[in-house]
Length: 87
Image 1 (cartoon, rainbow, N blue to C red):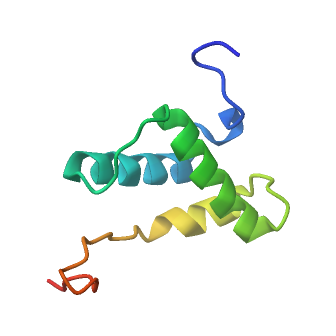
Image 2: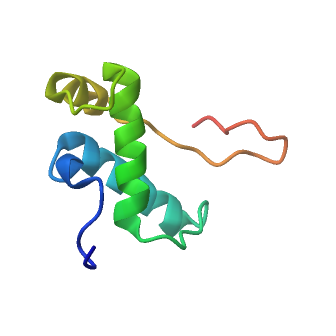
């Protein structure tokens, strides 16, 4: 595989890919996650798992992807007691 090839190419350019990519980027920028693996593998793996949970077989179901990404998920850092803080 070349530098730009990866097993998750079918997910690139989908709303799901964009949502996961933005979430991972935010987590890395906030220091919540340290990413040592190329971002495309992290994003692709998460996108594939989400798609699998919706279709049962890992195929890309565009309708499910649109439903999943319509409502973005807010990730908050846990407080000292491990419970996410509320705004």
